[in-house]
Image 1: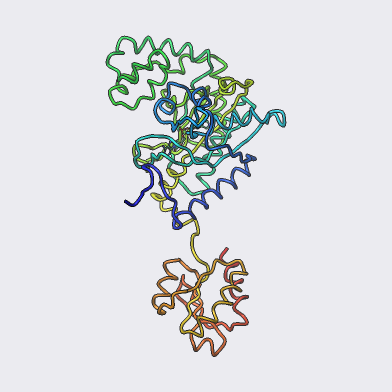
Image 2 (image 1 turned 135 degrees about the horizontal axis):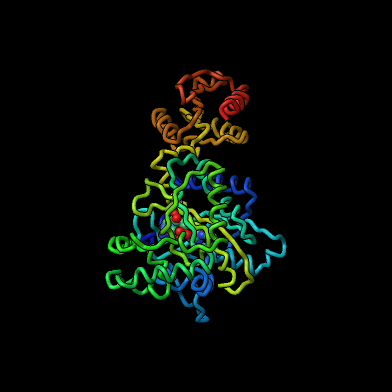
Length: 423
Ligand code: HAM
């Protein structure tokens, strides 16, 4: 039997890898512009990091992690997200002693044992940013603007930014009580998961996707009514900066997100091109995570964006061609002599830094031109017996189909001029 890949995983094939590289390049450029530096952490961690960081009672920890015992009977987990590992790395390597503020970004594969569907994979990739060491609301706004800037650079349109605050611990305690008072009389009508969350984590009931629970939640009290003055001020500063920066957003008083470490600002960016799994990005502030995993108090804020979902939106908005996965030059050779003569020419043109390829299969002129088209070559150089005799190339500009003869001696300067003009 032919073996197949594991359900919910994907091969990124040669025809697809260039768009990944293009997206990664834009991410790296914009992260540098905002002064974030890359951090890479191991693929697996102690299970406890996620249990304590994300929360025992969340879907991720409760049912989605790839957890296993190693030979030493230690419980390890393939990382399902990057925020807890980044915080662990920050604390363990004392990055806070080097600088009061640490701005980190990552691009990483992650693992969650979810039911695969469009936009929901078991191995997926995120890029994200985390700022550790400050509780300034300006940083909540900065990470949101950074995510938006990356999408803008890629050309993505029509995204929806939704914000809420889950307040500080005091606001949370007030709200938790109000929410439980609201839910208690109808608890039996909620789904089993919500009933189980009622005591341990009632805020997560607001995040339930079951239609009947959503209906029951419709009249629930709002976090905004339980906020302390400090929490209100924090959130108002964030929204003011976003408004002043011309970012459009809406408020959703019931947005709580599926991970327990959040305090103050939480946000999601969604796209209508994504169907049921419509979040392309999620994030927020997590001032208490450091202590939950045994470190010194370290306020922090960040976001993570799914790369597969980003690519789905790019495809729907026909942005995939922007990746530039095209050949610059394709050499067509006709006949044995020409086939030999193109070998050094291919090398010389590659030495100009142009993406160049040629026929290796002795195909007909028609088949070679078809190949040049398939590879989206911008220029085709044709070398037949005649051209060889006259020491020149027939040069075809594939954009407008114009053709001209250029002597061998001039071909390199012609190509340099042609590609400089285009870039
Ligand atoms: P998250 O909402 O769990 O947040 O994931 C962020 C994004 O990762 C989602 O909006 C989605 O685009 C993508 N994603 C999540 N699960 C999958 C999946 N199974 N398949 C494909 N894409 C997926 C976090 O992970 C937090 N660590 C975000 C954060 C950073 N908060 C503060 N800093």
